[in-house]
Image 1 (cartoon, rainbow, N blue to C red):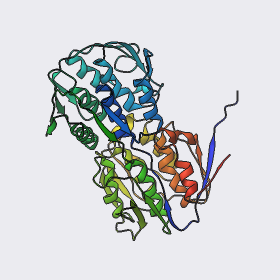
Image 2 (cartoon, helix red, strand yellow):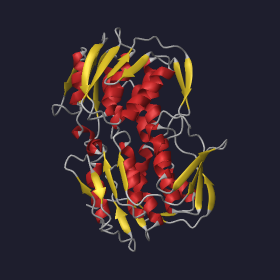
Image 3 (cartoon, rainbow, N blue to C red):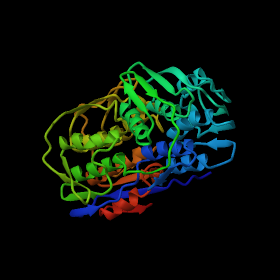
Image 4 (spheres, rainbow, N blue to C red):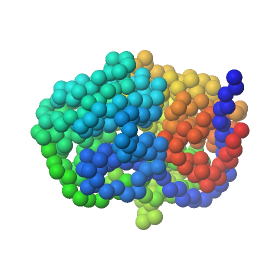
Length: 415
């Protein structure tokens, strides 16, 4: 039996000057606000929603009366809805893709059970699918390991205000992706919920939602690929409207990181403008504990710029849409580049000795992971041709990415 694999051939742009790119809305903010809007029973009205696959799945499941809820590949949907449906009267089955069924969720389920949630595993213990028998929960105090996934903690935080006694969450161990916890905390405060964090303790008070309107801002994670493109293509400037200079998104930190790696940025009334500048460092060391999704932007960029690196805080990449550490190592071997990483994925590095071969076309596998396609595509600037397998995977977070690349002058053709 023959299987058709869709492929895009990507070749570098010769375009110069400035290009204006409209970024997608942040799916991280979008999915949190969708849950809060549902908890408010529609009192929170939303605008400028994300059109990403993950956000569409979240919206669809929250508005569906079907008792079987399929989150597909969407990790935030699976984890957020596990907590959400635990406090909604009625019984549902929450499932997902085969990859999702191998993604652990026991830590979140155990925490919810402490405050009275009734959740059963219908397959392998500790993993989806989940049979959730929702009911009113009073809340109280719980503790949860915070070194696995910040999404567990955000899921608990969002239901906290709907519990009679609120919720106090103790974070155990070394916290990862703390910026996403702070994002959730900031959004709760914007809705009027009294919530605060003191070190390892997060307290969410019971709250009755009031009528309000909220907009979803542009996505800083999606902006990172344009920083990469500008740094690799010196003659091209990019204007990005819609980004918030004081964003709650942790990935807004890319402005500071890229300023050392060859890209300057400045805000004006039109938006954020990106321009290439002289590279300041010859070795890059960074802890991505709070920004793990950016690893797939910076590894291709550093290899293309011949900047050896050592990254830490990468452990959570093992349990994302794919094992991102292994996927990156596999794909860079195709360029004759050897990445070194620890068994637990905490550390990943490149010493610069294994030099990439940019002279031949390379076929990139995407592993059902949008960030593999998005992060690797800029390499088309330095190599003869990049061929992306299953390019539609970008719809998970940035549906218009290929169209925007064409706007920036890249040659893209289906083969």
